[in-house]
Amino acid sequence: MEIKNVEPKPYEKSALPSIIFEVEISHVKYQEAIIGVNGWLETDDGKVIASINEHIYEKQKASEIGARGSKFDSKFKEEIYRTRIIAQLSKQALDYIEKRRMADKKGDVKLNLCLNVKYLQSRAVISESFLIDPKEIDLREIRISTSRRYESGKIVAYAYDPDFSTSYTNRWIISGYESPIFLEVREQLLKKDIRIHSSDWIHDYAPNLGMGEYFAVEIPKGEKVIKEAWDYVEKAEECFRTWDTKGVFANCREVGKVLDNLYSAHLDINYLRI
Image (cartoon, rainbow, N blue to C red; front, side, top):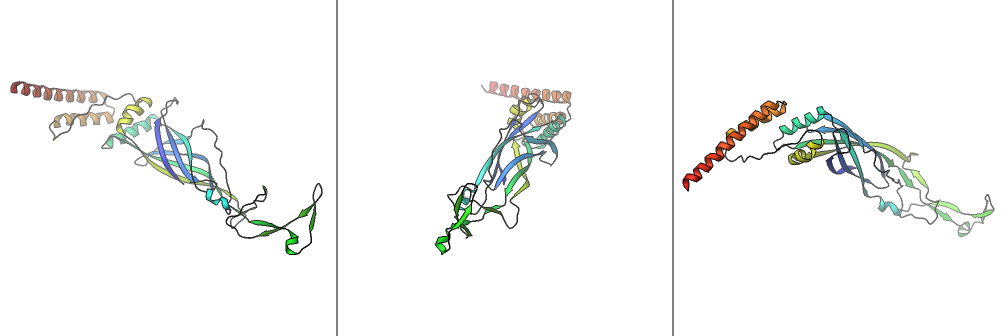
């Protein structure tokens, strides 16, 4: 059992800032039946920022549990369980996510999805049984009194047959494997790393999570040609981390002045060349 795929999205139907994850979990059909998923969400440094649960409006899922030891064993194969889970994020959680994002060289959000999957595990096997007519082994007929009348009885015999099958609807006799236990409830912890790219976080997540909208400016780094501008950008980032809005605005203004002067000087040089 493992998490095959996760697609995070900002969840717009919640009054609280939330992220919804569309999750695909692989399991063995007929051998395992998932009955519930919950867990928690961590930042890349292992800090827990939210508990998570399955979407309360998810459609009820029907799963079947089988027994091994027949021609139907080939149907015990990988199947995908699809669900949606929601993480509600507090202001403190969002602040910490942003702090970790600023520490990332690409400005990406890195999260760890930790899911506790509860499921039923089958321990049942088919006890292969065959019906023998007493006359075939030189025994007299067996008459059995039923609720309606006397019926001809058969002898039930066991023989191993990995491709066992029967046309009778009620002759799938099962046994617990090596014990009288047929079924057990298990839990398994699954983890998946998630990366939300900086551009997606700024344009799609931040506005829907109540973090406001960003105005993104790309400044070519070059060979430190505009090092002074970058120094102001770094100072603005430091102010942003401490929620010093005045410092952010002041340093961004200085970036604008440096770029304006550089651009003006470039135009003057080109004009003189003409």
